[in-house]
Length: 398
Image (tube, rainbow, N blue to C red):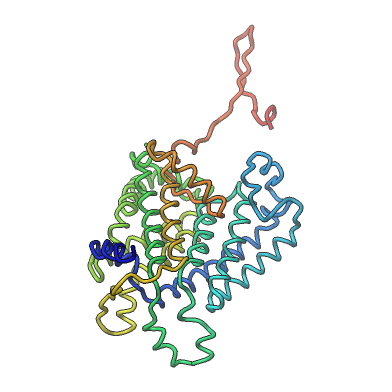
């Protein structure tokens, strides 16, 4: 059976490379460090918002929410907790991000951070959005990625600067990382292609409508005079999102590969600077270190890199198998609007929810369906004279 499997793999070199090719440890650990720094700021923001959202005396009626949505009860946080509980677990999370940055017990720490982020996300379900979804997804991938093999404090304290050369040549299993990159490409592609179902995106006014929402950093800044340039940006953002998955996997050092970096920076930094969605977009920018891992290592090693292909099938570790299965389940869970796949989408979504994962890549394609405002007016008409009088709505409907 093993020989048969090996022969099948050799018949499909790309599949063989995808499953078994090793990758460089340093880019993965740089991503770990960047994610840790981002996670630290994220948990600090949650700490500062405890009184507003997490607190039982905050703006969210958690008991009512749990009564309405029973599946939110699948959570380690239950009614009866106090503000001090949230302050305590968020301090633990902040300390955990520091350990993650330093490379100490990285997978165990990532698991702890994932649990805390996922539980708070569910507890504050009414106000969760893309930032919360992407941040707990990042922590989940850090459980599966082979982190801590380089750029860690313990090795440096033991061996000093001599360990740097070892780090530069350290290679680790690459399947989990490649699955993560497919996940990121799917986020871009799915977010872009689903916007084509929205009339506002198709006529170019979606971005203007979005920038008037409370989620915009400066909603009062935008006026109808900005519509022409925002119309161009609307179409261009769709083009970027749909094309990025193909550009990011271009040949190393090609013009299209470098163009993908420009597009990623333009798209995500543009969103982070105009909308209150900083963490998700910065996390996607941080993933560039993985897409450009070979270019980075070529610079660090100051030589031409020849990618190594495993001579034969090696053992696939449990984390790698979980990464591949998770990726397939995640993709199916997002396809709920395709009739032929709908029956697969909902079970996979439920399965992910049981595991603490909540993902939705329909990003602002709903702008014309769910974004609206209405005006109320009350007019009193005298039955005898026919005279009319406008009544202050607030005096009747406060």
